[in-house]
Image (tube, rainbow over all chains, first blue to last red; front, side):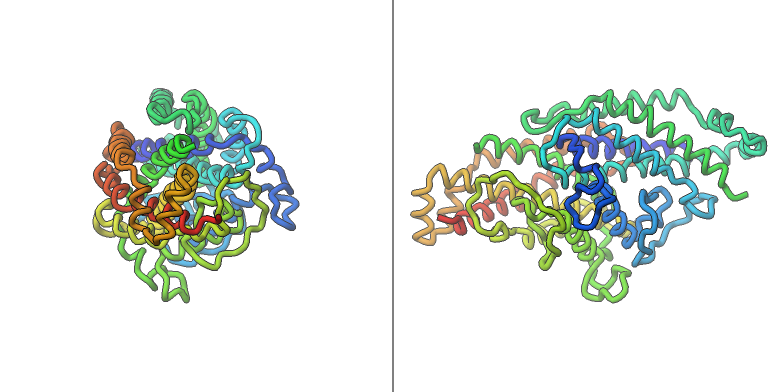
Length: 241
Length: 241
């Protein structure tokens, strides 16, 4: 089971990489992240980025996206789904998937990634920039929550007694350590770096801007992997017994 | 100028290919394209696909996407933009970009592509399928309209007298022939086939479904290239003098 989950997580790497490359075709465009500068009348508190994220999630909520465990929303108070989504049994044991919602921290990490990943400055392409931000965030969030939920359930089943002992002592640090597989993490980082290089090996550089493999690798190391583990711990702490 | 346009069109190939591969990770899911089976109450005339396309375009219209010449909408009666989009001078000479709108034919070609590209059957993933349909359609439409508008303007400027002579005779066939560059088309087809193969060369086949280079190549040959040329002819016919 853990092998299948690892394969699925691996399959999501291409998606994350291609969304980041898409975003990096536009400059950093700081105006798009400043509250009150969206150009939308009456929206003094939100940036164009905030608005795009909310509009996208309202649409997605109507279509039932957040019925899927690994699709966790960044916004609160979204509309109810307008259709019924029939899920196969997920095998997860938690009463509310949103007990594992790492989106606030994902957004923070992502927004600080932009400075290093995009060319500095303003190209006026605010709409395209925030559109691609939202697609990148969705791909990153799916990866983190898929890992957090399914890896944690699998590891719990492998050693329920060990997990319960750590929990009863309130030893979150020990739990995080139990969830750590150093050699797996290193393999992921190496593979991601190679994929970023390969994805860009043959592009026409006169029209496509390249990103550094190291940028994505560092994002995996400092955001995706640790937040997945924090999410795993949150899942195990909230798992129904 | 024609070289820069060709480079930009080339840069859009990766996007189209990756969106098609994304869609092909789900089965054909014919239910998602049947009117009245979306699960949305009161929507007897539309399919889930139709609804997703409309919701997406309503959101995008609010953000000003259709102020951009090559972004032509599939739906009619969309809301006005809620923000002002400042475009640099495009160099195009047409009073309404929607005089060149090939979306009806793009949609028809795309929907018949699905049967050959996706695995037959129903995996229940209707929401994801139509989400990726819309992203693929947007990428294809951008490629076709960018080519139609900017290639046509560039070719017109190269030989206004020749274009005007064909137009005054009402010789659309002659115009299409004038717009045809056989050797360029063959180079595109070859390159697209190679890119599809390369994009999938190293993926983990246990989690990612592959698509045939020939499928995308045929779509370029039978849809993207001819509709770009039809769009070019429409642009020249409607160009302001």
